[in-house]
Length: 451
Image (cartoon, rainbow, N blue to C red; front, side):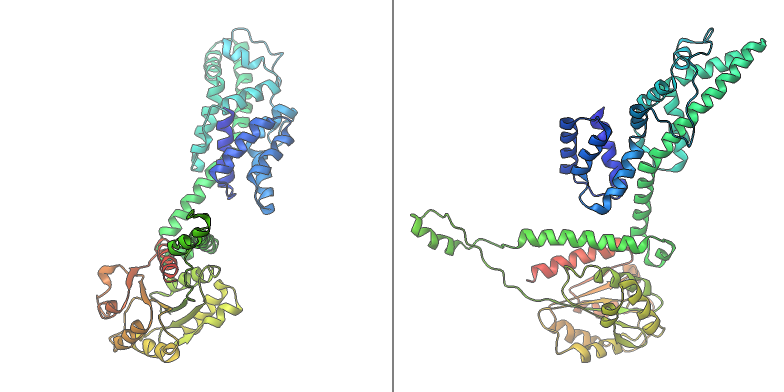
């Protein structure tokens, strides 16, 4: 039972956005078994030492601990929560003519009744609560686990009696039952704060990741989600780089060096990987049809500056402009807003964009260069300028095209993706944060393999 409760507590901490690995959770279980669960503050510090890695997480840990082990603290300290009030003392109430279960519950002191409530709560899995409307169901199940079903039966039986005395006792039982239910409901609300909201947050994030870019303005937490997704992907890539840092073993050098040790290879030599300083150029169509996709692509890339090489950014619609300095001077979300206000408009001209980009960067583009183009390839029936993209592709290592539209529309109307695709290493749909995250992961792998 204790192990299950600790596993539920770890899940509650994760719901509070405290990162805990499976190894750390197992260490906490072993530490708790070794140190013990009492006194309470010693138990708290034991868990904190094994589960909290950053000082900024300590306040959330303490709040989560107090909420999760609320009943345990009452049991230990005998202190009721003033928010609901102490449970009534019914030890002196006449329990004659009541069922055995009801009589036993009524004979308990407030502290004993609270302990019974805690024992009943330990039988339930509150981690299954996902929506706020489930609180009533879990509260009823909690009081039923205490044996409150027999109290309901006694209330119905006494209320149906013609005797005034029995009806008064039924009313007393109702009042007592209501106070116990309020206590149970308070505990369930605390558990929902720990578990249910974590499910709700995960569901909202899942929806935000899958939602089209044009709908993300409706979510208030989207900027925080973009940053966290970028940090998570950056950390994953840093671990990959660390694992791949040594490269392959150099068999020739290893065998030569082993001759001094009678051909025993005690010293291993590794092939040094030639480092190529990659360059990334990002060109974003910021016209009305794709400006939201451009907004999140630029924010995502600049949030990963720890693992990405130097990024030069360009934006275009009816005009073409480099926007790299905007990100050097302002935060990504501010920079993107300034760029959209300055450059966005109607009348997208891809041919003019490719020509302008080739004039600005053509001499710099080489086999270390990666060019990323975000746009719907809708050129308003203007010259495509594919010869400029062909020259860019010839000089660069790789060209990627991200299109927020469904592939079935890539060549409908004034869209001309068919003219541009032959010069791209890959053309991918990018209409949501999930698509964007998958592409950036793919890009980081491609850049790492190029080095």
